[in-house]
Image 1 (cartoon, helix red, strand yellow):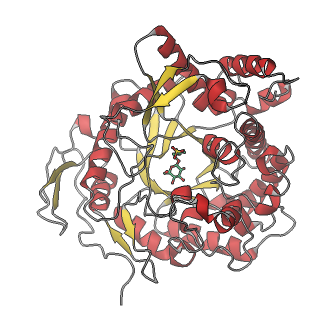
Image 2 (cartoon, rainbow, N blue to C red):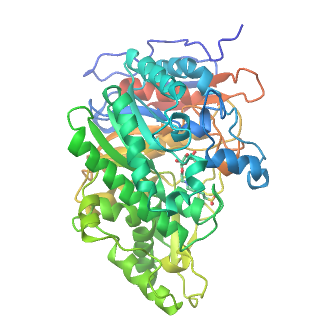
Image 3 (cartoon, protein in one colour):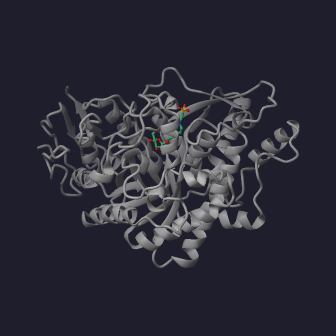
Length: 513
Ligand code: GBH
């Protein structure tokens, strides 16, 4: 009988005495790779730095209509529009973590990680999105998961919203309807009341840029395809909702809840050439893609980035709108949102080039036209199994430094970083990605003084990769979707990550085939 995960072979392999400079060489893990690592200043993270892995509810849980769970926009979208999903799959079963979460925790234990970042499904806990009806089975599920983590000494880091909006709220306009901010606060209150004392770190949102720009402005669920309009409405209400939850925590839960933050994604945006025009366009693009959410929360002045305000206002006028397509905060809202995060959760994967768009601005609104840059990537950059994800470690260091300078060196927690490949256990290219990005991170911390407190790899295991279905695999563990019990098997990178998490030093890795 299969346990559904690979049993640990070398439980204590990573244990070693701190302080002595040592080097260890593991003969073989059965996959043909060997590791050695040494505790030297330049390759080790500080002792209080934490390592973990991440997942998200819709991407791993399955059990989409089990025990009272409500329908989410991703359930609806994948069922109604399978043509919009690359391999026509959906998250109905996914990695079946709703049933197999105890195996997941055993994998986390094997890796020796200090934390696990996962998300709670809003429609699993509140089927209609509203707090009048609480689904007890949903509460039970997350309670058991939290207890399992805490009893193994793994610190839970919980995202309240990782894109699976209750469909009932989408029927009211979803994130484009201002009332949703109040409903999100009600949901947060339910989470604080039930789970507050079991969770160290809360994240309100995962990547509002993605679910506003790609969901309301593009072809992710709900697939509104209304760029330059609905994406701005979405962002506006997400920022209000985030600020309101932070104030709820400060006013009413300060003694129960330890910290509340938000996760934003920041791809590095490098000027395509050294020309002034391209450098200016790249900085404007950073303000649009990242400052859109970061400036209202993390800048001294709050509100949207001035350049974004100016460009969208001007272009809206030229397009004959009576008012700007970018909504305005009241002065009270600016104050409520400013400073509303204990730290910055940062997802970083890749780098793009930005060139100034010299063409005429079209009459059709779009975020891209407002931003005014042309986005590309260099052909030479090593590929992953995702078209958008190229391996550019130096972009990580630049992103961290930009954040340091723009927002007065805030506390940063890396909540996602990772690489997709095809199926296969010998993922030397993933180890190479990790090696490059971890070195860039360590340099940003030690040489540039960026304040980073933890690192989270995306993902613990393969999962439902949104519109890319199961075709792109980010896991340290491979999931066999064809097996009835969704067997999880450690990849080479899991052994690498185990060394990293247990020693806090970047393993020196020799791939011997
Ligand atoms: C993260 O987003 C998500 O938080 C996570 O759920 C996801 O599994 C992980 O990345 C891996 O993808 O196809 O050219 O239109 C990362 C940011 C933004 C990257 C949207 C992909 C689509 C680019 N994502 N983007 S494209």
